[in-house]
Length: 303
Length: 290
Image 1 (cartoon, chains in turn yellow, purple):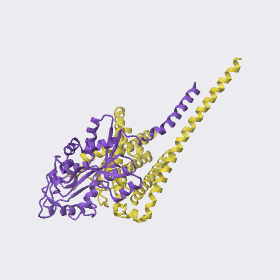
Image 2: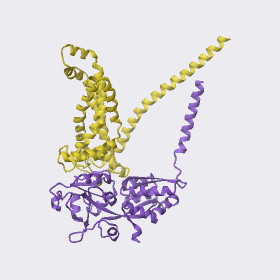
Image 3: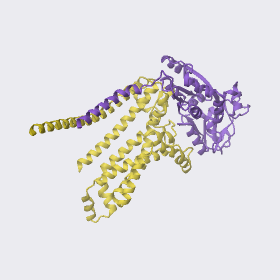
């Protein structure tokens, strides 16, 4: 009799386990599919609401027009593209060397106690809301920039770059740090055994070996910077003119969408134009992410 | 055991999914005990002070007041995302039509008057401007303070974003429908304009008097209608009498005649107590008009 009962409970347990297994598997598959569906839907929406702008203007006129006068129906986003690129380039020039240097320090130089202390602090930087960053830029940095560089106003592309560099720093540092830590010990040992100093080892063996990861970190940092809205809206002055230096006010694509979306009439040319800007932004960030991904893949393949 | 738990969880999930539907819907037919107010940035402080005073007397009512600009508020009003729209300009013909298309009877109530002040840094020697000079500054024809009697320095033009009612009002009244200079900095709030003026000796900006009166390093410039006429400051008396040239009424838009809690709230805003708040916040109460 005993023998009759046990297989039944066993069978029941097995069936439950199978149900669980099945549920867990499908929840995970579902989440994965949901992400893809979401991206596709976003792209579809951007295309649906962005492309109609070309009923009112042509692609070259839209991309290379120098005047953004949405209320008069003139949609040239060249100043906005250049504004975004200028602010981003400035931020990259500041954040990449700094971020990599911090990563090298944390991974290679810092004693364990300093490392444990410094890492969370750098990561906390990523947790500061961008409005707060923007507010600091407006209150603290803008007056300083104006006085130091003798400018008519401190609300410039440069001010935006500095604030955005602060926001990109944690991304760049943590990815670069992972990449540097992942460099095999043998590299360092071999380099030191050849008589290289610690600095020579870092510069000529460790960093070059981690360069794909560092590059990917930089690209992801750029992705974060070019899509950032609030801080830029607050500190760059938002004048839609084609910039000639980094010490002029600029208007970025993100700031334009954020500032103007609220007042546009749905399905008006202005509304379509804002979505088309979103589309341009999507294409740019997609390209950047793709590059970063390729770089990361190359780094894992080569090892 | 495990099966029971699984069943309980599925049952709970089902209840949640089914129950969430009706709970999310807004009971719009019943008189709301919570009011959403949205619109003009100029009026946001005023609206918040009113709301706080009203909620103190009626603790069962909750009122949330948001800014964003008159255009933003009107857009929200048209799509029924707010109960009351605060606006520093009248609705345009297009907007009125959109209301009609959606079966909303928009009704405006004037609650206060606002003189739009022009402000500069305290150290700026310029102490009056004509409307024409102001037009030239904002359209970019006049680029240097020297020609207005100031220092030899580039004028930094500050403006609000194009969502702002004040932006459109100034464009119509002062710029005579010309375009703002492309070099004008479009800042996201009047607070940001005040911030930049107080730290930048070359800046000029505009906004509600309340934002500039008594602020550190900020000077309000008297404005004259033209050469020869006296320059006037945006005081209550000058705004009411029409001597100050850049003044406008401030509206509340409601759907139909305000009823229930919304009606009571608007009556409160027009009451002596509500109008006292108007002058406390820095605008001109309309009680003085009567």
